Amino acid sequence: MDYKYDTDFWAGNAARKIWDDIVPGEPRKTIPYTLTKEAIYKLCKATGDMNPLYVDEDYAKTTKWGGIIAPPSIHVLLMFSCTPNDDWMRSPGTINASQSWSYNIPARPGDVITLQARALDKFIKGDRLFAIHDNVFFNQDNEVICSGRGWTIRSM
Amino acid sequence: METAFNIKEGQRIEGTSFSPTRETIWEFCEASLDYNPLHWDDEYMKSDFGKTNFGGIIMHGMSNFSLITKMMTDWALPQQGTHRRLETRWKSPVKPGDTITPSGIVKKVKVTEKANWVVVSVEVKNQEDKLVAEGEAMVEFPL
Image 1 (cartoon, helix red, strand yellow):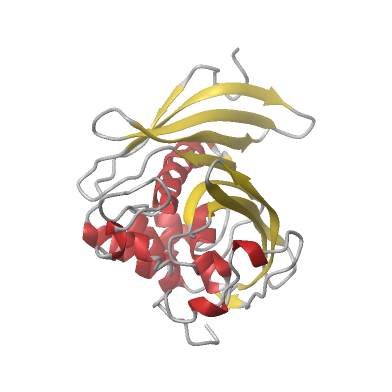
Image 2: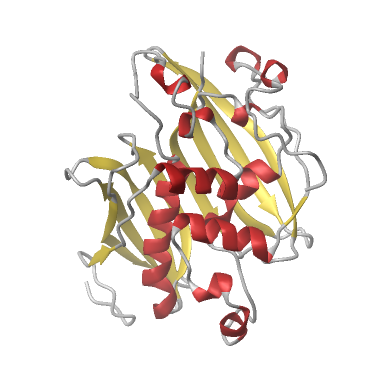
């Protein structure tokens, strides 16, 4: 990562957009991120998915992919590694209600991954404030890795 | 309906169970970079979220998402299938000490001009058989 990642999501929270400030359609700031084998391994271990295709180079070389690939759910990490500390996805108390993702090609170690992201919509349901985020991840060849959106309940 | 690639509507898919602990949830924070205090801050989780009080830290929804993904790729990859889509809705929070298990059922087999598509209805239940997540996956198989 080319910037200091702040693991304290309270720090800088004042700089983040609250629900009232979120403008559907407005792009979010994003940051290129170089994926590594170590980051893939760490996520696979944390999710209990140690498929050798993701973690064993010798095995992965024998497959049609010719080397290690990331699991489809790598966007779980990319969502945070490709956004700055003041991105509103980090607002403490943000609750994930639903997500949908489509997968095109796998991400690989060494890929320089970029994100195009925006708020797609915001609405009120009952007492809850919702915002939908819309995201597309690309590799260095401008190929789509995956695209998806998430329905979040905003903290108040 | 039987197809050339031998996947039938109604076929069941079983995933592997996962039992989150405070440690595994923190490990997921570090691996995903999602340090939302919902997942580690006991004091913060004493507060109310609108009408909801979770009564303690909760597991990341995306940890659940990853567990469903594992079920789908464990099923699809050995059959030359490609996991193409996953949509999930979270119905109940998952907490340390819970054991969650994903499963799926093939709802539709659809042949298009270039591939065999399989639509799978997925769900995750906890140790009390309570639904914690539901959704739909799509897998592409060669013709």
